[in-house]
Length: 284
Image (tube, rainbow, N blue to C red):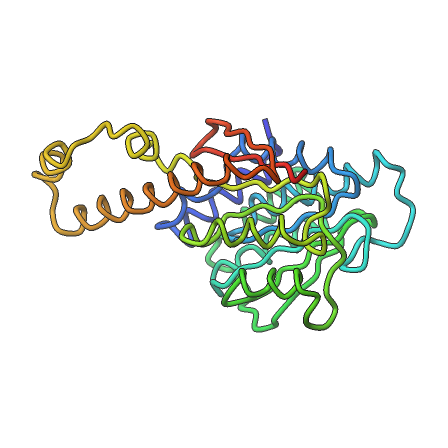
């Protein structure tokens, strides 16, 4: 099982952002993300969609592992090189909560003391600091660092990287985790595959939620007719109907993405039926 610090991240998410608590990576997926990051060449990770920092913390552990495995002895990882996690988020409340978690991890690691401090964030006497900086960096174990970047459009950020635009463009990454706008997944992948400035050759793109509550399988197989859908919505109120239709619409977009990416000869793809479905895409 993961350290109890990660469980505290889940509990804090339920307390501070209850409507999004289902979005936390969770133990099994978090462990997989750490292992994948640990197996990269340099431990350089780009995450699109921080939320409250569960996957971010998992990747940061993996980045340090990669540094240890390769015997990295350079300066602490950063945009310029070495083990490094850059994570991009637009939601201010999520950034505040993720930063609070990563600040604890930066000082105390992921042991019991860190878990106790993370738990204390839920106490009435503690207030999660509100941040207004565009980015904030957390060092970890004198090997890696993690930078949270505030951005309204993550796709625009990685397209800037792909074209070499902007100041302080980071060195290429080994792994890109896409947990952002589901309607533009092919655009995210194109930015990573089409330019070695974002993702190295042989690097991995991991796309979350590719099975979308199992509805992608129904969309792919045409398992439900319009009559079936109407019957399933018969006892729902208006809010539930809207949620159901939005979920089916997004499932259709995920099916389009899955169908398109598997035909792209620039990549190799495998889908893991873990949690809400993970697509692991290797850039040739």
